[in-house]
Length: 179
Image 1 (tube, one colour):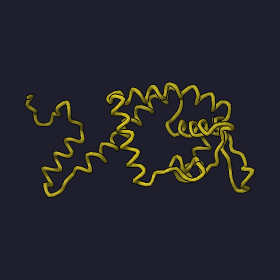
Image 2: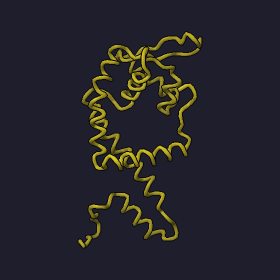
Image 3: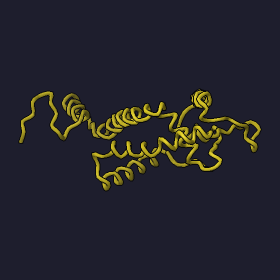
Image 4: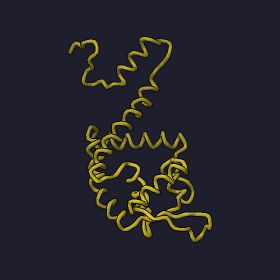
């Protein structure tokens, strides 16, 4: 067995392993095991976001821009959704949504139009330019996600997806009516 030098991690350890070890040493009265999951999820989110941001930058997009365009694209013809639906999908405030739509509209990727079924409502429609862009990015985006998950085999990926789905449902992240 390889001897560990203080401050160095073995190949089977990550940054959170050291954090957990420190908490066990400093607060032996507490069980830090929830941190093993929550802190790792947080670090994964940062690392995945970073990996995707690098990919999107090659298309002059940010992650949130792709998320809006992809939401509209997967909605099917005529590629439009109510602002509220987009906002709920992205889990953001109405002010943030307005700002994001302003930016996408300035780039000619989306258009806002009145909702014919709700006088106060606004629909967001993917423009042809926006559709061409999201279609161009989608294939390489999926490949980038495969690269990011390459540390897990297909069975582990399915198992992790199932566990994350159960946790999301437990926390109340379920489809909204009308979706």
